[in-house]
Image 1 (cartoon, rainbow, N blue to C red):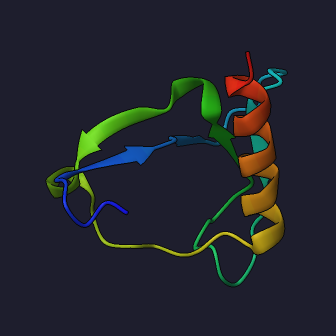
Image 2 (spheres, rainbow, N blue to C red):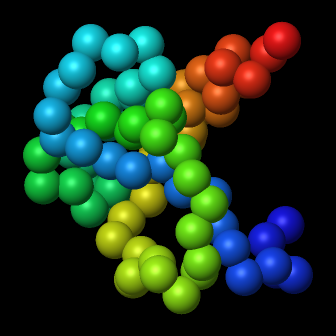
Length: 78
């Protein structure tokens, strides 16, 4: 989908817990490359240039990806 543009939509990760409904908890596992429990900050999604992205560190599970997708759908409903 992003093959024709030089930007990508990202959601930052943080290790700081905040009781905000738009944060998704990601536990450490052998695939995601995290060193501690982190939270996807969907309240801070942004578009950045692909050049700013570093190397891929890992991959989230399908279950975590579905949690993120479901919450994004809820956030963008009107």
